[in-house]
Length: 261
Image (cartoon, rainbow, N blue to C red):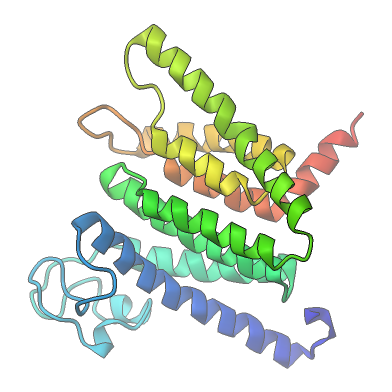
């Protein structure tokens, strides 16, 4: 559909999508922060996490506010984490790439929502090494909604269930066995739930590719990450990145691989 638009109109669509990603990145940062702190997501004004001062409109402009304030709170001077502009920029770019790949379709909208959920999960796992169940539930509900409006409910539901269990079930069984042998937790339950939820959106072959990519990303990420008191490494960000690459090039990589035989 986008290819039939004029160059100026295509630019407008992509630029608007990028701005939407910036705005959502800013908003989802706040959501993740409030979920972790136990604050209400829908009540209360945005405030500085150091001094508690309410933030004004000029403090909340995605990306620009952080740059203009040089990464500091205008009221107390405390540093504002670079994760805010980075996640805003990343989500804006992700939205544009999904739109470029899937055009103006329901599939694009579905995956944009999924990536928004994955950002929240990534931020929570990086901060507190947890993956809140509410984001898993929201991801499942989102998939169910798009299944219901797909016009092919039973086929889509079958593929979603196969995708959901293709990786999560073997991982669960393997985790339980290793837990018994090693007498300690070997894989977080949140990671397995994440594979189940995100797996609903893709074919089983893409899910196995994502598992492979996530493992590789997780190794490098683990070398750079700070472990918590239980010596655990947050694997949620690696899984999220794996699924992002899976939705962009997963099918193409699998076709390329099969073409070798």
